[in-house]
Length: 422
Image 1 (cartoon, rainbow, N blue to C red):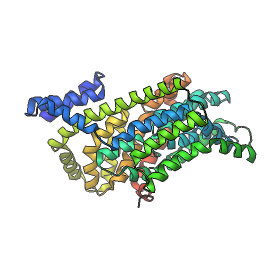
Image 2 (image 1 turned 45 degrees about the vertical axis):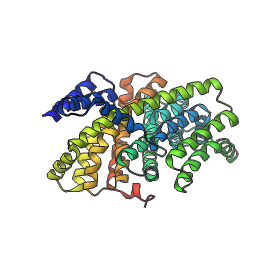
Image 3 (image 1 turned 90 degrees about the vertical axis):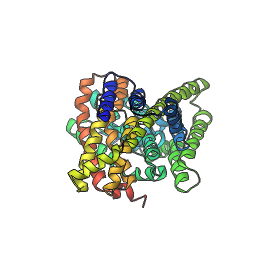
Image 4 (image 1 turned 45 degrees about the horizontal axis):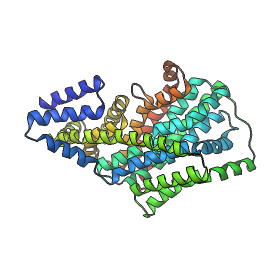
C-alpha cells in the first residue's frame, strides 16, 4: 500500500509540473519520513554521495566540449564538408543535414546541442532551396537524436554509472547502432525528397572537396583523439571529456579564432546550468533508487515479468514498449536514472548483455526527443524555424516510425551493439 501511495505522489507531482528532481526526492523522502526511521540528514548525505563520482565528471565536461564545438565554427565547417560530399544528390541538402548531425554527434554527446548547432544553419538553407519548412524542421529534430547514440554520449555515461557498466564499452557499442540510425534516416529523407521532387544542390569538384576536408580536419580529428585515446588505454572516458574541452578551447579560440572572451562567458555559464540540472536530477533520482532497492521492487518486477513469460523475445518486446512510453513523457536523464535500477536486473535475468541493453535503452529514449509532450529536439528545431507545432508533428511521424524499426533491429540483433566490444 505504501508503495502505491509513493508512486501516486510521484505522478501527481510530475503532473503539476514540479521539476522531476524535486518530485523524485520529495516522493522518496515522504516514504522514509513516514515509514522508516531513516534520519533526514542521511537522505541528504545519500543524495550528495550519488554525485560525488569520478565517472560523472564526464557529464559536465562533455557538455562544455559540445558548447565549445557549437560556438567555435566547427559545426559550420562540418556542414560545408557534408554539403560538398552530398549536395549534388537528389534531396542533397536533406542528406547533408543528417550527415552533419552524425558528424556533430561525434563531438557533442547531446541531442539538443546537435539539433541547435546544425539546425541553425541547415533549416534556413533548406527552406531557401525550396524544401518544405516543416519537413526541414523535422529532419533536424530527428537528426539531433543521433547525438545521444554515437559516442561520446552523455546518456550513455549516465547509464554506465547507474548500471555499473564500462563507459568505454558503451561508447564502442554505440558506433554501429549510430551508423544504422543515420543510414535509416538518410534513406527516409532520400525517398521523401524523390517523392516531393526536391532537387540536388550544385556540383562540387575534387578540389573543392579537398579544401573543405582540409578546413574541417581539426574538427574530424576530435572524435579520433577522444575515442582512440579511450580504446588505446591512454585515458579514461572521464579524462577524455577533459581532453575534449581543452581541444575545443584551443581550436575555437586560438586556431579558428571564432570564440571571444565574451563568448566564453556564455559558453561556460550555459554548460554550467545544463550540468547542474542533470546532476540535480541524479541526486534526486538516487534517493528514489535507494527506495526501490530497499523495497526490492526491481526483484518483484523481474519475478512478475518472468512469471508472465520466460521467452526473452516477448519479454524484450514488453521492455521496449515500456521504454518508448516512458521516453515520450519523461526527460531522458531522469528516465535512465529511474528505470535502470528497475530494468537492468530484468535484462540480466533474461540473459541480455548489459552493454547491449544500455544501447537498447538509449535508442528507445532518443525517440522521446522527437515526441511530445517533452520532445526537446522538436522545441529546439521549432524555435529555430518558427513553424507551427502541428505542422512539425505531421512531418515527424515517418521519422518516428523509422527509428522504432531501428530500435527493434538493434534489440534483436545483439551483434550490432556487441561486435566491436567483443
